[in-house]
Image 1 (tube, rainbow, N blue to C red):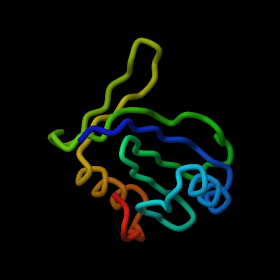
Image 2: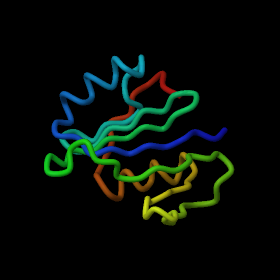
Image 3: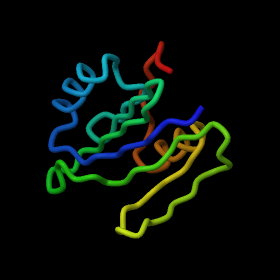
Amino acid sequence: MKRFHIALAVASLKTSITYYTQRLGQPPAAVVPGTYAMWRTDLLNFSINESPAQAGLLRHIGFEDDMAAGFAKTRDVNGIEWEQFSPAEQDRRIEETYGTAIRQTGNR
């Protein structure tokens, strides 16, 4: 499966988790308290991280791809960062970058 990935900076992780949980119709698949949250829907991999100075800015986009080998990062002609990664590699990188995530059960 291939999911489009969008990563945003937010002012408040707690407020944003409440808002995006309602908007996406499900709780996040993983949360690192005070820092990071990520949702996996059928079509979308959506992540946020608390960064008040950059709130509302696009951090990067890309694809979560079950067939991807590892992790790749490039920039397009407009300077936008694109990532491609497997779900397992993203989970590993979440832990490496933000710390231990609280995993939600029942999410894709």
